[in-house]
Length: 195
Image (tube, rainbow, N blue to C red; front, side):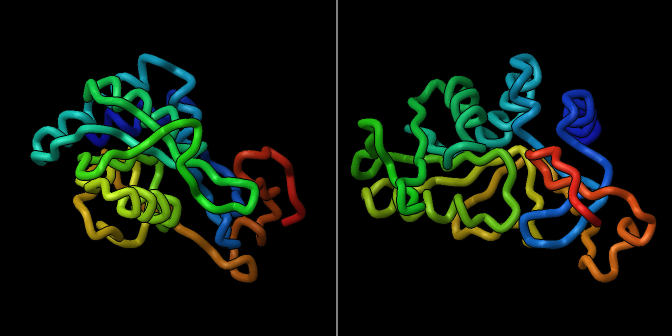
């Protein structure tokens, strides 16, 4: 299954190779821009079918899917479609706080699956978990296409994902890509930076 997932990520140009400045400040020769795979409905459907099967086999029962905006919105929608349950998303307000708006709600005791495209530190997912718990919903699990984090599961709930990716990272002062003079890109912007 891992080879199939990697093939989809490469075909959709989601798995990038080059010289990247990560949000952590570290550099890497690989970057996963998972949003790109969701440009293609067939790939989206295929990945979410695989994820749905893993969720079913883990015994997780879901009443509703919630995702953090923006990265999780498309996977949340497609996975909720596959699971035949409603889908909502959380977003940041003007102060940067994660909130549930647009008339979305979570009912007391509702089984909620939190869905993200890629988990690295799990920060956004943890903010959404807090929203669900504050609304008295029941978090039944976390789901993602890829786990890029250092931990197998950084959450207190079951974590179901399709692929684990461990990319080499370098501090800027010891980056071999910088030493080779390879231009650095900040993912998402495609803007060349001085490396």
